[in-house]
Image (cartoon, rainbow, N blue to C red; front, top):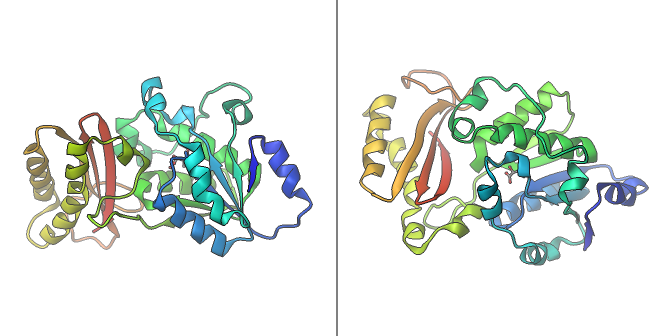
Amino acid sequence: MKYFSSNKELLSHIKNKSIKKIGLVPTMGSLHLGHISLIEKAIIENELVIISIFINPTQFENNLDLKKYPKNLEKDLKMLNKFSKSIIIYVPEVSDIYSEGVVANKYFFGSIEDIMEGKQRKGHFQGVATIVEKLLMLFKPNNAYFGEKDFQQLQIIRNLVVQKKIKTKIIGCKIIREENGLALSSRNKLLDEHHIKLAPILYQTLKETQKLKNKLSPNEIIKYVEKKISFFPSLTLEYFIIADEKSLSPINNFNINKKIRTFIAVKFGKIRLIDNLRF
Ligand code: PAF
């Protein structure tokens, strides 16, 4: 399996191969079937797929969160082995990406950054945009793949490529779930036994609110969710929002001709999980 820690070496390896279509799947490792679904789609749609595995320091709010982020490179490489003919793996050191200091660039995304994850995790999307822009500029992929679980991130990245006139097509891929509905996430591994059992409540709640939309207003549904989560002493609801999918602005009524999505973030003890669902 081709594996590079230097972007220069990776680029010189692919330079003379006249590859027509390159796909990029940026990841922070700790791979699960959600990532694998992005990789499989990318392999079908491109001649070569670059998978980056890099825990990007500038998107973490603090060092503790960064240190806690699960890593298991050996296991990741094993999972990727079966794709070895179609992929190249890029696992850089921090200095290979941030040669001029570990700082995020400055972007203006307006209201799509100010709510939900952007509000809870200050600077998070500035860091995400920085690493994604760097990867897109380095490898100039035709297509780049991101999961819809991080739906706000996906909208930020769509906005980024428009702002920066980057030609890469940004492809959002559907959420992969456990049988019990829990969206796959690297952070699920950090849950204790008690919270693993409770975690499907995220998806159950989103599904339940879909059924309430003919009976209750958006505000009443929000109150319902707040009450429901408050029954569990070790859970904290960070947000539940019913929003226009494109602008991510919360809506006040359902009589609008827009695609609507619900978004939820809950802390299970110290671990926060997010999910979303088309309404
Ligand atoms: O979604 C993620 O895993 C990360 O935010 C990304 C897009 C790989 C950037 O570090």
